[in-house]
Image (cartoon, rainbow, N blue to C red; front, side):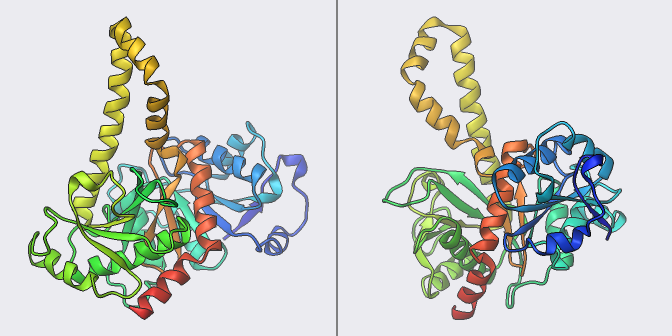
Amino acid sequence: MQRRAVGKPETVGTRDACEFFAKQRAMPTIALDAMGGDHAPHEIVKGAAAVSLDTQIDVILVGDEKQIQSCLDRVQYRPERLQIQHCEQVIAMNDEPHEAVRKKPRASLLQAVQLVAAGEADAAVTAGNTGAAVLACARFFRPLPGIRRAALASVYPRQTEYAGQDQLALLLDVGATIRCEATELVQFAIMGSAYARRISKVPSPRVGLLNMGSEDNKGGQVLVEAYRRLGRVPGVNFVGNIEGHELIKGRADVIVTEGFTGNVVLKLLEGIADMLSELAGSAARESWRYRLGLRVLESGLERLRSLTDYTAYGGAPILGFEHLLIKAHGRSEARAISNAIKVAAKAVRDGVVREIRATLESA
């Protein structure tokens, strides 16, 4: 793969870029799919540029070199923190994942993942096609020993119930594995618990199993078996079944479910947040009494907006492999991409994969 250091034409010298950047690997290097997402490449590149200004994280921008450089020419950035890995192909958001991965081997998403697999970057970030991201990980990353299926995680805001509890809960799986056996749900719990320990800094995160009742015999054979086994896994603080109305409370820090249900829950939470925001705006337009009421509730509404603002969270990981990919929201703009890059770097620095591996070995 050919790569060049970033800079305006007059700043690109003859220095061996690879040698230079090899000396900078004390901080994580993140391979960023610059062409993935609804607002690519401009917002993606803008997010990377912002990271270059306020962190020591190195970013490899993977995608069309001319488009990337054109975006960079419109923003401020530190060229010594950025490189460009040129590639011609792009997997669109609406591409069928299997076909796209097969027919577009030079796509930016696949190239970013391959940089990580080859050891040239420490983690990957994309706001692109979710299905293709999962397939790319499965194709180029080795699974962790014993892991049967990957899990796509997501974070969402909820109430807190104890001091030090993260205001974000981790939900997995949200779409990588549509249907699961009990073993896979148990493995999701182990991976999610390890991730929350490292990223949320919760020493013993509470793990709940999403179900249709609190009793241990609810939900069918798979969930009953998963419930029985989760209570015996060393290192997993299992608090039992979690019902739908408890998702926004602080009873569990990690909620485990199969991908089909998890995806429905995730989209439902996003829809509720959008609806609340729209209702508040609509009410304000219709009546001065509503506007007055909204002024009274202003601080609370601002709190709600901040909690439901996915751009603040960046992204969430695809777990189950020896490397990490952080999947950002498809609608991500610069702020969300910056935070996704920082989450990826934090996950690398804090040894998330190492923590998951150790927990799996002791389970």
